[in-house]
Length: 95
Ligand SMILES: [Zn+2]
Image (cartoon, rainbow, N blue to C red; front, side, top):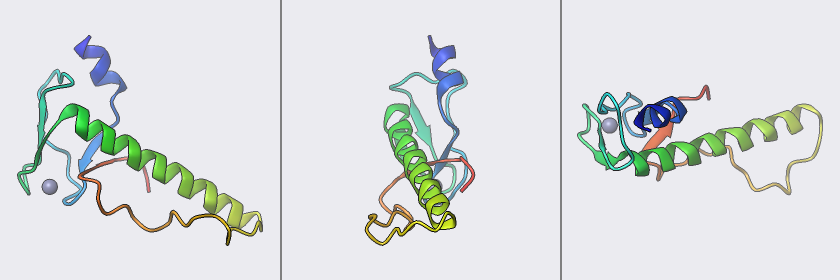
């Protein structure tokens, strides 16, 4: 169970420090993640939620960039290029 969670979870980074948090070896959903630099603490569940939101943000931004390259007008699309500032945890997917 915990093993599956560990395999499926995205790599999480602290949104402020961009460093991997300390997590238990076999994290459960209500365990805590802890940033060694700014000392923020959240549950694995909350951190994964933010990281997933960030991953979605990166995906929509990549789509928007592809549309730009294809020459489509994107002026009507809500800009997603601005970084999300209110995420405490982010995904380590390539930006
Ligand atoms: Zn931090």
